[in-house]
Image (cartoon, rainbow, N blue to C red; front, side, top):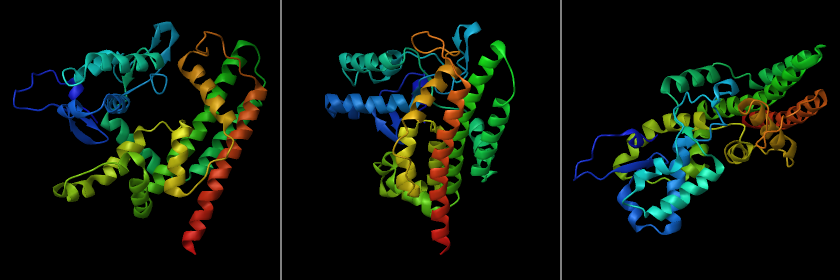
Length: 310
């Protein structure tokens, strides 16, 4: 991941500053020869590799006035894009900064501490019973849902249970994919060859051996950086790498993920400031949809394993 943005010491005249995009060093001087569209898209790629909307993984505490930026920030898009100044026209930087700010006013770092990622990966790889874990989570949610709790506590509990269903889904999707890809050289190779963010990379012949030796670590870093409830992005990864298709209609899951964001990161309110109401019926419907989704995926994974054995 990029380290240049935190670099404060002045550059020597003979040095050419660069940024890291898709794990490759790109000299800033290269931007001078790009078209306007290429400049914008390349800068956008760099920005979204290094910064994310705090709604994704940043704690929210309304009593503290909003997000608690434990990963760094808040960052302003224009301030961070200023690294390209002198190589990209100011009006182009301002245009991209405006577009990004329309999506999110304040950003946090997408880069997480290495010990955080190492511990998380160890936890994932230590347990390959991801389908059993999913079903156990759903069973526990159903047991709690059956409890007779009234008043304001019930509304709060329903919100927690709703979020827990989505958490169970994304945990299954991440654990299953990471376990299979990192524990099988064939799937690892397929992922690298067919994932568009890896397939488009180029390297010099002198880098072949070092890149080969470090490819698994690059894949680990990439997979741990993914937001596994971003089903639109995860869906093609499952198809191209594991030959597993998601259900054709995931509309209810997409809607549930939006509600999950409101519950987790906006203290139960949507973007318009309206309180999100979660009912028992909503949770039961989401459990049915989530279970159908994961069963659909797991049946294909099981079938693929049986085919390999044959």
